[in-house]
Image (cartoon, rainbow, N blue to C red):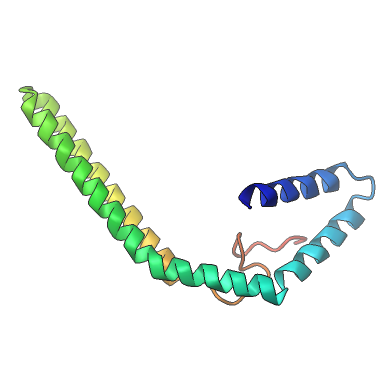
Length: 134
């Protein structure tokens, strides 16, 4: 499905860029895209996807933190067994930094899940705040 969407989007962009009509073709494609976006079936699917994201974002965020914590602990363990205290210190510092970044990423995922929009307005879709033709 993703491949089909990318193909159609690429074909539309290629048509607009290659068309002699230029602006007319662009306006036509834009209006068709807006009418598709406003289709009740599309909006139903968008709302289902947003609900799924809201429901599962905390789970994904928690899993990110768990996996990063486990990886950091294993890296520290292996480095401490190497016998080289300089290497162990560097690996420990990097592991702590990676764990912190993963925690930040997990928080961002959770926040994104809470902030998912359900308005179904043009400009609130795949590129929020971006409206074609402006």
